[in-house]
Image (cartoon, rainbow, N blue to C red):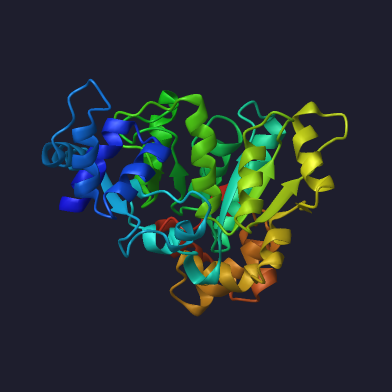
Length: 354
């Protein structure tokens, strides 16, 4: 706690200014306590410096944790990116080890990003990709922003699985404010909110660009959906290339301005994808085999039914499932009842779906 409390106090005093923290870290010889006291003696700020222990306890009272880069829990992938964060703040975190250290069941974490001013079709695509990739075992990371980000998170939650949101300000205030409900749903599902900024730091414009390197850094691949020429998603793609991550892009109509940035990425060598299966194939993931184990099938009959639903990718009624699985009608009905009770499948107008 001592080293973490001194780092936290320094982060508050500098508003997480990367260059300043790096400078005093070096002056402190690797000790955050020495770094904080050196900054204190220099008198670089007129505002009174926070008391390290009081500030740390106040942070903990908000349900926020701090993980320093030198701690075991820190995401391994973030240690090896340009300008790695010195620490990350977390809310939730039940899925931290699995989600941020390269995922469950051998499947990767995929960052899904795009424009805030997404079209209805773009949001539908993001939600569909988020749902399908999550159901196949991937972890979805995004930025909780309007448009594509929110739709990707919603898709993961549709599958009943946790997701990761990377914020551009302190975790004490969710931005945008209208997404507080979405953030709470992410936490309730076992998901994680992440930021490199301490509580109280506002989500200023340049911090959205800074946080994009964290979003791509915790992921093995970045999926771009509907990005115009000036989209911040393009910055995420650039970070991904610098970090040796794959970049996947969903194309759009050649006349659509919301896809000009997307098409530019494809021309520069990003991989064009038109379905979640394209991404799963790139990572050697068998969707039908992975989905049942990932979601939590507890019997051979559940595995067979979940594989069938994953394979067809659309809602199916009982008769369709009987034909696909060749199980007895009473077995299909009984198994679907168990899956419905546990929230693994849901019933829609078109039939049952994961």
